[in-house]
Image 1 (cartoon, rainbow, N blue to C red):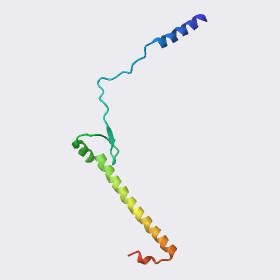
Image 2: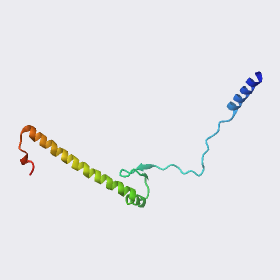
Image 3: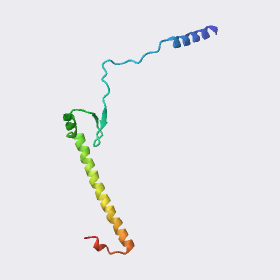
Image 4: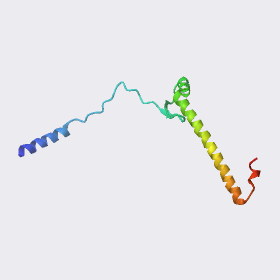
Length: 105
């Protein structure tokens, strides 16, 4: 029993006496670049990148597709709000007992 306790103490002392390992640094790793998110498609773009790359991104399939989707959704949203305002106006006119024919011109 005494030998087991001594071996445990020896193992613990070895663990604490080992020098701490330093994190391994990759000498070939590139420094991190500042990035920003495209407001249209959500792609990551390098800040201060060449204008040609930015233009290529804007003309790309992903950016163009998201721009078309956003335009479609915004158009539907405007139609929805217009229809909602028309319904609200009809309800308001009905509530005030105003003839709606004046507003439908």
